Amino acid sequence: MAEPSCQHKQELSSVTVPEGKVSNLRRFLAFVGPGYMVAVGYMDPGNWATDLQGGAQFGYTLLFIILLSNFMAVLLQALAARLGIATERDLARACREWFPSWLNIPLWLACELAIIACDVAEVIGTAIALNLLFGLSLLAGSMISVLDAFLVLLLMKFGFRALEAFVAALLVVIGVCFTIQLIVCAPVPGAVIRGFLPSLQIVTNPAMLYIAIGIVGATVMPHNLYLHSSLVQTRAYERTLEGKKEAIRWATWDGTIALTFALGINAAILIVSAAAFHGTIHQNVAEISDAWRLLSPVLGFGMASTLFAIALLAAGTNSTVTGTLAGQIIMEGFLHIRLPYWARRLLTRGLAIIPVVFVIVLYGQGKVGTLLVFSQIILSMQLPFAVIPLVLFAGSKKKMGEFSLSPLWIALSWLVAGLIVVLNMKLLVDVLV
Image (cartoon, rainbow, N blue to C red; front, side, top):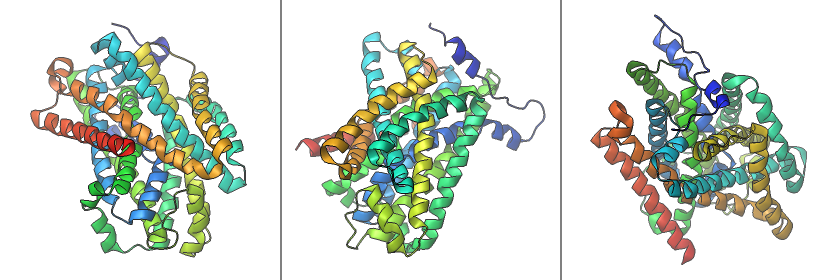
């Protein structure tokens, strides 16, 4: 059995958990962090594109998809945390050790494609935010986004707690920005509540289904499952039966609370878009830059567009940090290769910039929104390659021991996995036909 690298071993159990007779709150706070690192991926610039389009074109109807996606995310991230704590393996390493070698290469390639697709969204989001705030061209902003590799390197020098604090601070910025915009747009409460109820139209309307699956792809991130299964091991809990039970309980609470916050942000983006644009001449708004330009005049609030851009920049920066960690975990887990964080970041970001520059040069800045939504569809197509192994392992008594799932939870997990596969197959048929 291959062991983690020396550097990775140092990162495991690096966050102290208080011992002795301390309050449950203090012990819980020691486990708070990984959930918010993961939640970042659920409100990255890719979410913005799909949520904005969904709200502008279809009003509040797709709030149900955001709610459904969040439920699936909570369940799957809880399974990832459970796997990491119970087996002391992240999902990538589990695949390498428990699957035949011929299967691991395509699984690794699918993961890398998902990370690049996510990074495409981050490049576009950062470039658009820099354009909106400072007037830089999208091409220049895309190139500047490479420099975030140094931000990641700097943050990693201060350890995981500092990294988590930085991420949490930017999440607060995003939350404050959208809370203000929600108050200003003053949506009708009854219409919002109805939007959280299921509608047959979501399945029967191909255009709505396309955006709906994009929301699923943007919300349930495949690489986040690998990331969470590793980050929960940074806590110095006792590697005993009781210690692992407690760690799973607190890690599940941490993830659930963090993802509920992400649900609020994603719902807020769609609600603001629906309240501002749906049923108006701006109903076909598809570009983030167009939404920024129109928000202030439509809502009659001068700061609306600025708050929107600040939140977008915070979201892109946050996703950069977690994307780098996820890429490192996946590469080491599947291939047992560990690159320096800056090298891993430059590799992924370099590959992500290529399609963005290609689209800008050939088709102009107006088409980057289409690429942004397409990147989320690519992400959605990669989900089964992460979800199926996760559910398979989490339900295995042989691999999980006393921590294996009950029959009810196994059935529910496979139902979620099956729903994801069916939605992706439906999307593929619609796109090809």
